Length: 366
Ligand SMILES: NC(=O)c1ccc[n+]([C@@H]2O[C@H](COP(=O)([O-])OP(=O)(O)OC[C@H]3O[C@@H](n4cnc5c(N)ncnc54)[C@H](O)[C@@H]3O)[C@@H](O)[C@H]2O)c1
Ligand SMILES: [Zn+2]
Ligand SMILES: [Zn+2]
Image (cartoon, rainbow, N blue to C red; front, top):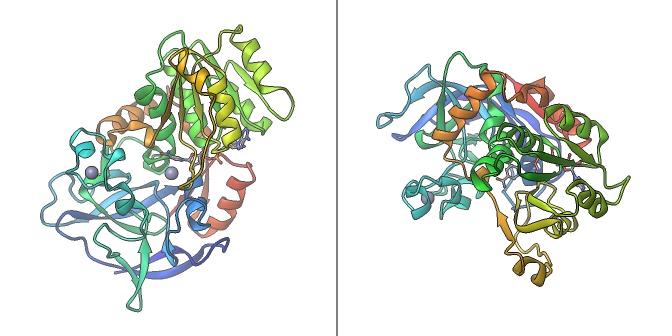
Protein backbone atom coordinates (compact mmCIF):
# COMPACT_ATOMS: atom_id res chain seq x y z
CA UNK A 1 0.00 0.00 0.00
CA UNK A 2 1.19 3.57 -0.68
CA UNK A 3 1.40 5.93 2.27
CA UNK A 4 2.85 9.39 2.87
CA UNK A 5 5.77 9.66 5.26
CA UNK A 6 8.24 12.24 6.56
CA UNK A 7 11.58 10.71 5.58
CA UNK A 8 14.80 11.65 7.40
CA UNK A 9 17.57 11.53 4.79
CA UNK A 10 20.59 12.77 6.75
CA UNK A 11 22.01 14.40 9.86
CA UNK A 12 20.60 17.90 10.34
CA UNK A 13 18.55 17.65 7.13
CA UNK A 14 14.91 18.64 7.22
CA UNK A 15 12.31 15.89 6.94
CA UNK A 16 11.01 15.37 3.45
CA UNK A 17 7.38 14.37 2.82
CA UNK A 18 7.40 11.52 0.31
CA UNK A 19 5.35 8.55 -0.89
CA UNK A 20 6.50 5.30 0.75
CA UNK A 21 5.25 1.73 0.37
CA UNK A 22 4.14 -0.19 3.47
CA UNK A 23 3.77 -3.97 3.77
CA UNK A 24 0.59 -5.71 4.86
CA UNK A 25 0.67 -6.68 8.56
CA UNK A 26 2.33 -10.00 9.42
CA UNK A 27 0.42 -12.51 11.56
CA UNK A 28 1.26 -10.76 14.86
CA UNK A 29 1.16 -7.22 13.44
CA UNK A 30 -1.44 -4.52 12.94
CA UNK A 31 -1.84 -1.71 10.41
CA UNK A 32 -2.72 1.56 12.13
CA UNK A 33 -4.14 4.65 10.42
CA UNK A 34 -2.45 7.46 12.30
CA UNK A 35 -4.67 10.28 13.52
CA UNK A 36 -1.83 12.22 15.15
CA UNK A 37 1.73 11.77 16.36
CA UNK A 38 3.80 13.66 18.91
CA UNK A 39 7.36 14.74 18.23
CA UNK A 40 9.73 13.76 21.05
CA UNK A 41 13.18 15.26 21.57
CA UNK A 42 14.54 11.75 20.92
CA UNK A 43 13.30 11.88 17.29
CA UNK A 44 15.58 14.84 16.59
CA UNK A 45 18.48 13.24 18.49
CA UNK A 46 18.11 10.06 16.43
CA UNK A 47 17.85 11.90 13.10
CA UNK A 48 21.06 13.72 13.98
CA UNK A 49 22.87 10.62 15.37
CA UNK A 50 23.27 12.19 18.81
CA UNK A 51 22.32 8.99 20.63
CA UNK A 52 22.44 6.06 18.19
CA UNK A 53 23.32 6.06 14.48
CA UNK A 54 19.88 4.94 13.23
CA UNK A 55 20.54 4.52 9.48
CA UNK A 56 19.02 6.90 6.90
CA UNK A 57 16.69 7.04 5.07
CA UNK A 58 14.40 6.43 8.01
CA UNK A 59 10.84 7.23 9.02
CA UNK A 60 11.09 8.34 12.66
CA UNK A 61 8.24 9.06 15.07
CA UNK A 62 7.31 7.06 18.16
CA UNK A 63 4.33 8.82 19.72
CA UNK A 64 1.63 7.64 17.34
CA UNK A 65 -2.10 7.49 18.04
CA UNK A 66 -4.55 6.07 15.56
CA UNK A 67 -7.22 3.62 14.54
CA UNK A 68 -6.65 -0.05 13.79
CA UNK A 69 -7.17 -0.53 10.06
CA UNK A 70 -6.24 -4.21 9.57
CA UNK A 71 -4.89 -6.99 11.78
CA UNK A 72 -2.71 -10.04 11.13
CA UNK A 73 -4.39 -13.42 11.47
CA UNK A 74 -2.92 -14.25 14.90
CA UNK A 75 -3.88 -10.92 16.50
CA UNK A 76 -6.34 -11.16 19.41
CA UNK A 77 -5.68 -7.96 21.36
CA UNK A 78 -7.39 -5.47 19.02
CA UNK A 79 -9.86 -5.40 16.14
CA UNK A 80 -10.29 -2.95 13.22
CA UNK A 81 -11.79 0.30 14.46
CA UNK A 82 -10.13 0.16 17.90
CA UNK A 83 -8.38 3.34 19.05
CA UNK A 84 -4.76 2.77 20.06
CA UNK A 85 -1.63 4.47 21.32
CA UNK A 86 1.61 3.07 19.91
CA UNK A 87 4.48 2.36 22.29
CA UNK A 88 8.03 0.98 22.00
CA UNK A 89 8.76 -2.54 20.84
CA UNK A 90 10.03 -5.42 22.97
CA UNK A 91 10.68 -9.13 22.50
CA UNK A 92 7.93 -10.40 24.82
CA UNK A 93 9.83 -13.36 26.25
CA UNK A 94 12.99 -12.18 28.08
CA UNK A 95 13.04 -11.92 31.91
CA UNK A 96 12.09 -8.20 31.82
CA UNK A 97 9.22 -8.72 29.39
CA UNK A 98 8.00 -11.64 31.47
CA UNK A 99 8.14 -9.43 34.56
CA UNK A 100 5.80 -6.91 32.87
CA UNK A 101 8.61 -4.41 32.23
CA UNK A 102 9.08 -4.51 28.44
CA UNK A 103 10.86 -1.13 28.60
CA UNK A 104 13.82 -3.04 30.05
CA UNK A 105 13.63 -5.76 27.40
CA UNK A 106 16.97 -7.53 26.98
CA UNK A 107 16.56 -6.89 23.24
CA UNK A 108 15.20 -3.34 23.50
CA UNK A 109 17.71 -1.77 21.12
CA UNK A 110 17.19 -4.32 18.33
CA UNK A 111 13.42 -3.83 18.58
CA UNK A 112 13.62 -0.03 18.54
CA UNK A 113 16.85 1.56 17.40
CA UNK A 114 18.49 -0.59 14.72
CA UNK A 115 16.37 0.91 11.92
CA UNK A 116 14.41 -2.30 11.32
CA UNK A 117 12.28 -4.95 12.95
CA UNK A 118 14.34 -7.18 15.27
CA UNK A 119 14.79 -9.63 12.35
CA UNK A 120 16.48 -6.95 10.24
CA UNK A 121 13.57 -6.29 7.86
CA UNK A 122 11.53 -3.11 7.47
CA UNK A 123 7.87 -2.87 6.51
CA UNK A 124 8.75 0.33 4.60
CA UNK A 125 10.34 0.72 1.16
CA UNK A 126 10.59 2.94 -1.90
CA UNK A 127 10.94 1.37 -5.36
CA UNK A 128 12.24 -1.85 -3.78
CA UNK A 129 14.85 -0.06 -1.62
CA UNK A 130 14.55 -0.39 2.16
CA UNK A 131 13.39 2.63 4.12
CA UNK A 132 14.39 2.18 7.76
CA UNK A 133 11.85 1.60 10.50
CA UNK A 134 11.99 3.15 13.94
CA UNK A 135 10.88 2.26 17.47
CA UNK A 136 8.54 -0.46 16.21
CA UNK A 137 6.17 2.09 14.61
CA UNK A 138 7.67 4.88 12.38
CA UNK A 139 4.71 7.12 13.16
CA UNK A 140 5.75 10.15 11.05
CA UNK A 141 3.50 8.69 8.36
CA UNK A 142 -0.15 8.31 7.47
CA UNK A 143 -0.07 4.58 8.34
CA UNK A 144 2.10 2.50 10.61
CA UNK A 145 2.87 -1.18 11.09
CA UNK A 146 3.25 -2.27 14.72
CA UNK A 147 3.07 -5.57 16.56
CA UNK A 148 0.00 -6.21 18.64
CA UNK A 149 2.24 -6.16 21.72
CA UNK A 150 3.17 -2.51 21.17
CA UNK A 151 -0.29 -1.03 20.77
CA UNK A 152 -2.41 -0.03 23.76
CA UNK A 153 -6.17 0.16 23.34
CA UNK A 154 -7.82 3.33 24.68
CA UNK A 155 -11.49 4.30 25.11
CA UNK A 156 -13.15 5.83 22.05
CA UNK A 157 -14.48 8.70 24.19
CA UNK A 158 -10.93 10.01 24.83
CA UNK A 159 -9.66 12.64 22.33
CA UNK A 160 -7.36 10.40 20.29
CA UNK A 161 -5.46 13.23 18.61
CA UNK A 162 -4.03 14.25 22.00
CA UNK A 163 -3.01 10.78 23.16
CA UNK A 164 0.12 10.05 21.08
CA UNK A 165 2.54 11.73 23.52
CA UNK A 166 1.30 9.41 26.29
CA UNK A 167 3.21 6.63 24.49
CA UNK A 168 6.61 8.19 25.24
CA UNK A 169 7.18 11.63 26.77
CA UNK A 170 4.15 11.71 29.07
CA UNK A 171 4.55 8.09 30.22
CA UNK A 172 8.26 8.68 30.83
CA UNK A 173 7.85 11.73 33.05
CA UNK A 174 4.77 10.55 34.91
CA UNK A 175 6.08 7.00 35.27
CA UNK A 176 9.44 8.18 36.61
CA UNK A 177 7.60 9.85 39.50
CA UNK A 178 4.85 7.27 40.07
CA UNK A 179 6.45 3.92 39.12
CA UNK A 180 10.23 4.29 39.22
CA UNK A 181 10.75 6.54 42.23
CA UNK A 182 7.34 6.11 43.94
CA UNK A 183 7.23 9.73 45.09
CA UNK A 184 4.77 9.99 47.97
CA UNK A 185 2.61 12.45 49.90
CA UNK A 186 4.69 15.20 51.51
CA UNK A 187 7.93 14.40 49.64
CA UNK A 188 10.22 16.97 48.05
CA UNK A 189 11.13 16.52 44.39
CA UNK A 190 13.01 18.60 41.84
CA UNK A 191 12.67 18.17 38.09
CA UNK A 192 15.62 19.38 36.03
CA UNK A 193 14.49 20.33 32.53
CA UNK A 194 10.83 21.20 32.04
CA UNK A 195 10.12 20.01 28.52
CA UNK A 196 7.37 17.49 27.85
CA UNK A 197 8.99 14.82 30.03
CA UNK A 198 9.75 17.18 32.92
CA UNK A 199 6.32 18.84 32.90
CA UNK A 200 4.61 15.43 32.84
CA UNK A 201 6.71 14.57 35.90
CA UNK A 202 5.61 17.78 37.62
CA UNK A 203 1.94 17.02 36.96
CA UNK A 204 2.45 13.52 38.38
CA UNK A 205 4.27 14.86 41.45
CA UNK A 206 1.28 17.10 42.14
CA UNK A 207 -1.12 14.17 41.67
CA UNK A 208 0.70 11.98 44.20
CA UNK A 209 0.80 14.82 46.73
CA UNK A 210 4.46 15.86 46.80
CA UNK A 211 4.74 18.88 49.09
CA UNK A 212 7.68 20.60 47.43
CA UNK A 213 7.96 20.46 43.65
CA UNK A 214 10.89 22.37 42.19
CA UNK A 215 11.11 23.05 38.46
CA UNK A 216 14.51 23.89 36.94
CA UNK A 217 14.96 25.24 33.42
CA UNK A 218 16.70 28.02 31.54
CA UNK A 219 13.46 29.05 29.79
CA UNK A 220 11.26 31.26 31.96
CA UNK A 221 8.21 30.52 29.78
CA UNK A 222 8.52 26.84 30.69
CA UNK A 223 9.00 27.68 34.37
CA UNK A 224 5.76 29.71 34.27
CA UNK A 225 3.96 26.70 32.78
CA UNK A 226 5.56 24.46 35.42
CA UNK A 227 4.06 26.66 38.15
CA UNK A 228 0.66 26.49 36.49
CA UNK A 229 0.92 22.68 36.43
CA UNK A 230 1.97 22.22 40.05
CA UNK A 231 5.53 23.40 40.71
CA UNK A 232 5.79 25.13 44.08
CA UNK A 233 9.20 26.64 43.31
CA UNK A 234 11.20 27.41 40.19
CA UNK A 235 14.90 27.92 39.50
CA UNK A 236 16.48 29.41 36.39
CA UNK A 237 20.16 28.44 36.81
CA UNK A 238 21.20 31.23 34.46
CA UNK A 239 19.78 33.74 36.92
CA UNK A 240 20.60 32.26 40.32
CA UNK A 241 22.91 29.76 41.98
CA UNK A 242 21.12 26.41 41.68
CA UNK A 243 22.78 24.66 44.64
CA UNK A 244 22.06 27.58 46.98
CA UNK A 245 18.46 27.83 45.76
CA UNK A 246 17.83 24.10 46.29
CA UNK A 247 19.28 24.36 49.80
CA UNK A 248 17.05 27.31 50.61
CA UNK A 249 13.91 25.66 49.19
CA UNK A 250 14.45 22.39 51.09
CA UNK A 251 15.35 24.17 54.32
CA UNK A 252 18.89 22.78 54.07
CA UNK A 253 17.74 19.15 54.25
CA UNK A 254 18.01 18.28 50.58
CA UNK A 255 15.65 16.59 48.12
CA UNK A 256 13.90 13.27 48.61
CA UNK A 257 13.77 12.87 44.82
CA UNK A 258 15.39 14.44 41.79
CA UNK A 259 14.68 13.74 38.13
CA UNK A 260 17.07 14.87 35.43
CA UNK A 261 15.69 15.25 31.90
CA UNK A 262 18.42 17.53 30.53
CA UNK A 263 21.04 14.90 29.57
CA UNK A 264 23.57 17.45 30.84
CA UNK A 265 26.09 15.72 33.11
CA UNK A 266 26.78 18.95 35.05
CA UNK A 267 23.08 19.26 35.86
CA UNK A 268 22.80 15.56 36.75
CA UNK A 269 25.75 15.93 39.14
CA UNK A 270 24.08 18.90 40.83
CA UNK A 271 20.85 16.92 41.14
CA UNK A 272 22.72 14.10 42.92
CA UNK A 273 24.57 16.55 45.14
CA UNK A 274 21.25 18.08 46.24
CA UNK A 275 19.76 14.78 47.53
CA UNK A 276 18.76 14.30 51.15
CA UNK A 277 19.94 11.14 52.94
CA UNK A 278 18.14 8.13 51.36
CA UNK A 279 17.17 10.36 48.43
CA UNK A 280 16.94 9.04 44.87
CA UNK A 281 18.01 10.73 41.66
CA UNK A 282 16.47 9.31 38.49
CA UNK A 283 17.65 10.30 35.02
CA UNK A 284 16.05 9.92 31.63
CA UNK A 285 17.91 12.35 29.34
CA UNK A 286 19.02 10.71 26.10
CA UNK A 287 22.73 9.89 26.51
CA UNK A 288 24.92 8.20 23.86
CA UNK A 289 26.89 5.06 24.76
CA UNK A 290 30.11 5.99 26.57
CA UNK A 291 28.89 9.20 28.20
CA UNK A 292 30.42 9.35 31.69
CA UNK A 293 29.42 10.98 34.97
CA UNK A 294 31.64 11.70 37.96
CA UNK A 295 30.08 11.36 41.40
CA UNK A 296 31.17 12.12 44.95
CA UNK A 297 31.28 8.52 46.16
CA UNK A 298 31.28 9.44 49.84
CA UNK A 299 28.17 11.61 49.43
CA UNK A 300 26.27 8.85 47.65
CA UNK A 301 27.34 6.06 50.03
CA UNK A 302 26.96 7.83 53.36
CA UNK A 303 23.25 8.60 53.48
CA UNK A 304 22.42 5.66 51.23
CA UNK A 305 21.55 7.76 48.20
CA UNK A 306 20.41 6.07 44.96
CA UNK A 307 21.16 7.00 41.34
CA UNK A 308 18.81 5.36 38.90
CA UNK A 309 18.59 5.23 35.09
CA UNK A 310 14.98 5.16 33.89
CA UNK A 311 13.45 4.15 30.56
CA UNK A 312 9.88 5.16 29.77
CA UNK A 313 8.99 5.56 33.43
CA UNK A 314 9.19 1.80 34.18
CA UNK A 315 5.82 1.53 32.49
CA UNK A 316 3.83 -1.53 31.69
CA UNK A 317 1.99 0.49 29.06
CA UNK A 318 -1.06 -1.79 28.82
CA UNK A 319 -1.75 -1.16 32.50
CA UNK A 320 -0.35 2.34 33.06
CA UNK A 321 -1.52 4.25 29.96
CA UNK A 322 -5.26 3.66 30.42
CA UNK A 323 -4.88 5.04 33.97
CA UNK A 324 -3.12 8.19 32.74
CA UNK A 325 -5.67 8.63 29.96
CA UNK A 326 -8.51 8.37 32.48
CA UNK A 327 -6.88 11.04 34.65
CA UNK A 328 -6.51 13.24 31.56
CA UNK A 329 -10.15 12.76 30.54
CA UNK A 330 -11.25 13.65 34.09
CA UNK A 331 -9.25 16.90 33.94
CA UNK A 332 -6.71 15.86 36.55
CA UNK A 333 -3.72 15.50 34.25
CA UNK A 334 -3.90 18.45 31.84
CA UNK A 335 -1.39 17.44 29.19
CA UNK A 336 -3.28 19.46 26.56
CA UNK A 337 -1.48 22.49 28.06
CA UNK A 338 1.78 21.20 26.57
CA UNK A 339 0.44 20.52 23.09
CA UNK A 340 0.38 22.59 19.93
CA UNK A 341 -1.04 20.99 16.78
CA UNK A 342 0.58 21.25 13.35
CA UNK A 343 -0.57 19.85 10.03
CA UNK A 344 1.64 16.88 9.09
CA UNK A 345 3.14 18.84 6.17
CA UNK A 346 4.54 21.37 8.66
CA UNK A 347 6.73 18.88 10.48
CA UNK A 348 9.89 20.95 9.99
CA UNK A 349 8.29 24.05 11.53
CA UNK A 350 7.11 21.89 14.43
CA UNK A 351 10.65 20.58 14.99
CA UNK A 352 12.12 24.10 14.89
CA UNK A 353 9.52 25.33 17.38
CA UNK A 354 10.32 22.46 19.75
CA UNK A 355 14.08 22.98 19.51
CA UNK A 356 13.79 26.74 20.09
CA UNK A 357 11.59 26.14 23.13
CA UNK A 358 8.61 27.96 21.58
CA UNK A 359 6.39 24.90 21.96
CA UNK A 360 6.67 22.07 24.49
CA UNK A 361 4.98 19.20 22.65
CA UNK A 362 4.29 19.55 18.95
CA UNK A 363 1.69 17.11 17.69
CA UNK A 364 1.28 16.48 13.96
CA UNK A 365 -2.26 15.90 12.75
CA UNK A 366 -3.05 13.82 9.69
N1 LIG B 1 14.61 7.61 29.04
C1 LIG B 1 13.52 7.67 28.31
O1 LIG B 1 12.75 6.70 28.26
C2 LIG B 1 13.18 8.87 27.52
C3 LIG B 1 11.90 9.05 26.97
C4 LIG B 1 11.59 10.25 26.32
C5 LIG B 1 12.54 11.23 26.21
N2 LIG B 1 13.79 11.00 26.71
C6 LIG B 1 14.82 12.04 26.69
O2 LIG B 1 14.48 12.93 27.74
C7 LIG B 1 14.96 14.22 27.45
C8 LIG B 1 13.85 15.24 27.60
O3 LIG B 1 12.89 15.05 26.57
P1 LIG B 1 11.85 16.21 26.25
O4 LIG B 1 11.05 15.75 25.09
O5 LIG B 1 11.17 16.66 27.49
O6 LIG B 1 12.88 17.34 25.74
P2 LIG B 1 12.78 18.93 25.76
O7 LIG B 1 13.86 19.42 24.89
O8 LIG B 1 11.37 19.35 25.52
O9 LIG B 1 13.11 19.30 27.30
C9 LIG B 1 14.38 19.44 27.83
C10 LIG B 1 14.38 20.69 28.72
O10 LIG B 1 15.62 20.76 29.42
C11 LIG B 1 16.02 22.12 29.49
N3 LIG B 1 17.46 22.17 29.68
C12 LIG B 1 18.44 21.76 28.83
N4 LIG B 1 19.65 21.97 29.37
C13 LIG B 1 19.45 22.53 30.58
C14 LIG B 1 20.32 22.97 31.62
N5 LIG B 1 21.64 22.91 31.49
N6 LIG B 1 19.75 23.47 32.75
C15 LIG B 1 18.40 23.55 32.87
N7 LIG B 1 17.53 23.14 31.92
C16 LIG B 1 18.05 22.64 30.79
C17 LIG B 1 15.56 22.70 28.15
O11 LIG B 1 15.43 24.11 28.21
C18 LIG B 1 14.23 21.99 27.93
O12 LIG B 1 13.13 22.73 28.44
C19 LIG B 1 15.58 14.13 26.06
O13 LIG B 1 16.97 13.96 26.20
C20 LIG B 1 14.95 12.90 25.46
O14 LIG B 1 15.78 12.30 24.48
C21 LIG B 1 14.11 9.88 27.37
ZN1 LIG C 1 10.39 9.67 23.04
ZN1 LIG D 1 12.08 -8.70 26.09
